[in-house]
Length: 272
Ligand SMILES: [Mn+2]
Image (cartoon, rainbow, N blue to C red):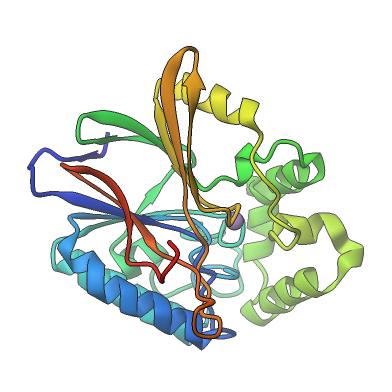
């Protein structure tokens, strides 16, 4: 199990839902500025899904994606341990291309970024406490249509068929899925519908199964620290913010940080 806090000076940063891509250079600049400012001082960086607005395979051609991969690779080379989890928009991160693929990336995501891939969900040990990490979309169980679409898009057959297509065709399909509501289910698999909120019973069940009292997830774009009693004992759920560089004062984003002194939200614009 991944463990943070063996040495007292260690610190972990968490973020998700940056939705980076060439369509939004300002949010990329905001995120890179915060990352450069804070991540070097962290021993561990956890990217909990939806790093990218879309990911049609590890040959995704965005310049912004290349810039993030360069930064992560430099961080990893400098000693920060970098972990990435797939979200509903970038669920094809580091998925191997089939032998029949028309094209394939020069390097898979994990080699290019220096990041290790995390299962969703997974438990990590943070300063002696087991903590459950998830993107969050699997916990939105009230949205039955989305969960069906999610299962399809995560299936080996669907992913093999999709990745076998040429890059321009995959980009076109992704654009269509985002643009056309008549293919509602597929569009939902790409995460275009309102993310909705998590189901409290799904949260309790996931935390019970993992035997944890603390959880961190993103996806819902509803940053908060929820505290309640789970089976009679205190439980805590951190929800990460999404990132967006709106007009001054309307920015969203920020990191969650844990070190030997506890949890803080940091690095984000005012209000986080
Ligand atoms: Mn999401």
